[in-house]
Image 1 (tube, rainbow over the protein chains, first blue to last red):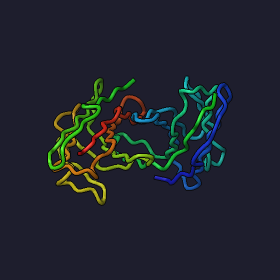
Image 2 (cartoon, rainbow over the protein chains, first blue to last red):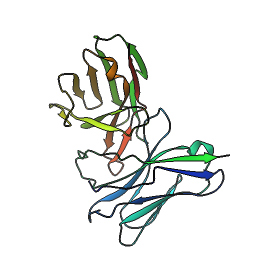
Image 3 (cartoon, rainbow over the protein chains, first blue to last red):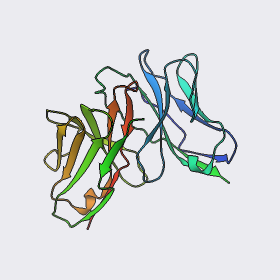
Image 4 (spheres, one colour):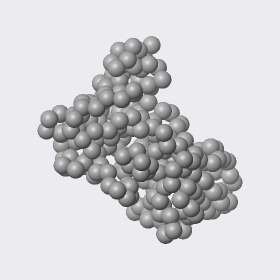
Length: 113
Length: 116
């Protein structure tokens, strides 16, 4: 798996957009970018993933640069419940689903009232 | 969406005893599950890959005789911490890929183990 680099922490005002960056300069052509988050004392939660096009779902948007060396997860209107550690991971999905995933240190997002 | 459960959610055991943690995929079959360990304020560390019908694959530095993994069926994997010691106290999390969701990895809620 390609390594990722994320800032250790960020603050965001409640109601504002939270933009979480991730660098993955060694990403290979068949690797996707995945984002998960972990709220305190819970298991990680899948948020979104993408290959090269920007993606949006009910939780967030994912913006991937044209060279795919970095991406940004956007929470459009952050709430206090979005306070969590956000992990950016790159991996290649495969039909067997056997690929193990290595977590980095992630970004601790603190949403401030 | 896919649901992965763990039981128990928390457990306290005495040093020297063994404790079993169950991980179940509730609405899908998982031939492969993963076990992670997380110490306070640290990231998840992969311990082992659990394969249905075969032996688990352990990460370097993880004692396979201490952390016994059994993938008994396509919906159940168990992690047994044998002869637990206080340093084994941690948050244990399992995960499984859902083949129908573009191979998204879904995580259980975690099990908090405290060894006294």
